[in-house]
Image 1 (tube, helix red, strand yellow):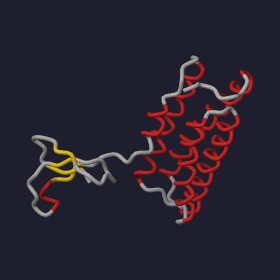
Image 2 (cartoon, rainbow, N blue to C red):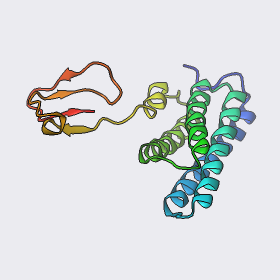
Image 3 (cartoon, one colour):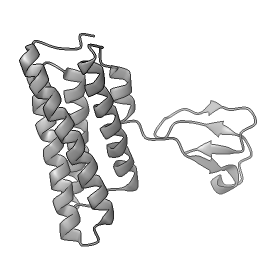
Length: 165
């Protein structure tokens, strides 16, 4: 994959500055969201998170970095759902957003070093993490089956004492 689309070096440099700023915004607003107790303040933080992803999505498109734009679009969509529900973020979404901040920062470092983007890593941040659930919590089943959260088919994990749900 090309590390740059059709953007010039100057445009890419501007994008990378924007990326750094939006990652800082993302981290700052997520941490503030976690500290806030007032629903209106939390909703305001979610709006700020949405704006950061929206801005970054457009900037990534402008320089032809489709994998970054796609990631930002998906995060933006998830934040829209949270905005529609009054600004509540699930713990899972907070985790995805924190992981996305790390992945976005790493992407910026890779681009500055002249390396290609790791598109698989960008997409992987959106996958829900697996959770191990004790077999006893699943109606007494004794088999140790593991499956990624949201998957339709389990895979056997020898010696496991639980399922991933």
